[in-house]
Length: 328
Image (tube, rainbow, N blue to C red; front, side, top):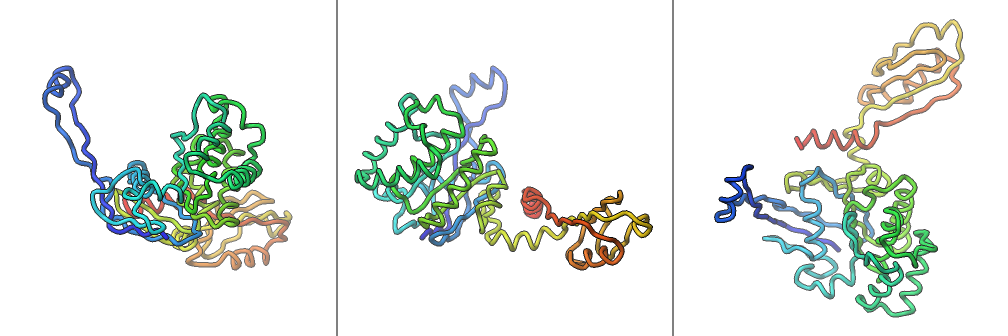
């Protein structure tokens, strides 16, 4: 469905040292620096996948999305999506995709949301019956009841973002590009957006490419991640495999009944004692040296366990470790 081969893109950026004299010089002679945004970027994405496209600021994520959506033209390389070259066949191609940029709006600021939806229906040429069916589904799934009449400028950020998602899907696209869709949203709005993305992927088979700095979005939605850094693809693989490779420590916390045996902390090979304050103890387990089940068994032989929990490090720690591995 999506084939990207050897994409390259550079930008010329004007440079000027600080100071009034330099500002005057720049009026007559500008100096430029060439910034390589993308260098030999290649990957494929199959129908129905949800792919997390991650990387630090300035890595090239938004540039890639803009090329894939037909907004930018690359300097070199090949991109075929649904049989189209995005920047060459844009009119026909955009009918097949939906795009949401978290910091940009496709809704008209001073008119009611429903008027923006109607205008988009005319732009995409969506038949009236199909439009009503899609709109009803989107209103119900995204909880947009009552949001159609107020002007866009009167909506909260979370309400507007849900309307942006609806606007991008009114024409029934096969692919959805999401660039920071949950930026600035509160917890409830983020949950609503994530739930909706999972729904359209599972029920309609929409392929989703998601760029975000919120790693909880990645963990909740994506099974595969692409890591880009300094304009190059550095990692392409399953999130689960990455967790197995980098998240080798887990925290085991147990609650137990206090007795004579619980007065002295338990020593377990492969586990580091974090705290021992009866009736609770916590251990950091190195899963390369021992298993979580072995630690629990050793504790149960010494203590009368009441409750236990096993926690993995947060997803942010996983991604931070990946960035360190590639010196980003």
